Image 1 (cartoon, rainbow, N blue to C red):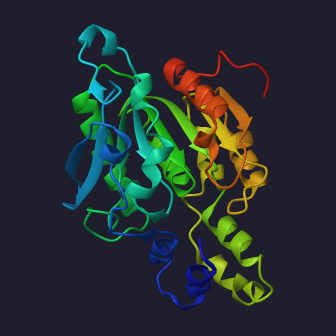
Image 2: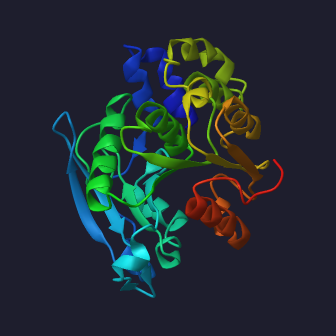
Length: 288
């Protein structure tokens, strides 16, 4: 959400196309799961509008060895991972690289325009990418519970996807790390960090709000776990609280620590996330 990108809001045409400014893709991979000792497969998906997008499938494994026991894995959850707005899965996957060794398979998706994925990212087209990933996962593991995990921009996309398709794809739970409350809201927040930003503030009125997580949260019917760090300098803590407070489904909140989306750098917060994914619910947590 850089200042340069947001300042371009005033000079862009077409309300929907403005959402493309929130996506900052990179096509070059920095690393792969193999670099951290994980077995993985390249997955290429065709979307409903005939775009090819790429993902990494990291099955459940122990020390780089696949867990082959069908009985052991029959009811194990699988995670659809949606990363933040910058770079690509190669710079984000470490956030979830610990899950396969805890028995949780992960499909990490690159939206259109990111990494090896074709196309150009904007709303609502990226939702077709997520749908294609969900279809692949349900075909791959039809009996295994599907949990959607989104960070930052990925959290906003996850809210949109689960609100619209939770029943179609039998989503069992949603995990959000550092969600923002709305597209116009995060634009205004970023502009507020500089006095010159106020010159561009009127441009945020052009940004569509129909995909705002705070408005869609009440329609989510599955359990939700929300993390947000009070020291997040990218997405204000209070925006995450607004999304959480708008939820009507059984939900739980945990303060994260550190900078933006550093949640899974901490073993105790990984443990919280793992418990939630395994249970697909908040019943094992006490308090807010």
